[in-house]
Image (cartoon, rainbow, N blue to C red; front, top):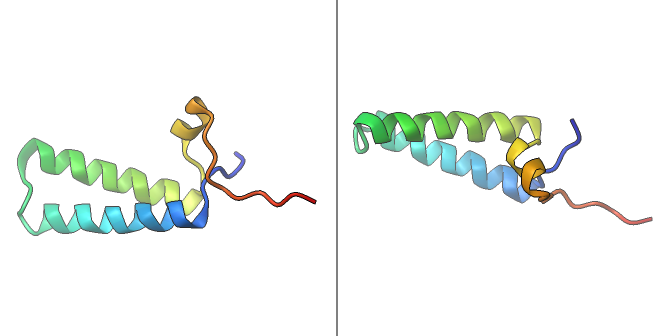
Length: 69
């Protein structure tokens, strides 16, 4: 697995995951939408920690800055 996520992308995903967790555990978003946000937050955390997003591979995206020598 080659990394395809840059640091900014990873930080944004972690912040969004924290917001989603707050909305769910704070009781602001409940029911099906709450579960969806919680699952999406978990996916954001996992992809941020690994630095690889499978969806980016499918669409040919790469936010990881590469240095040209």
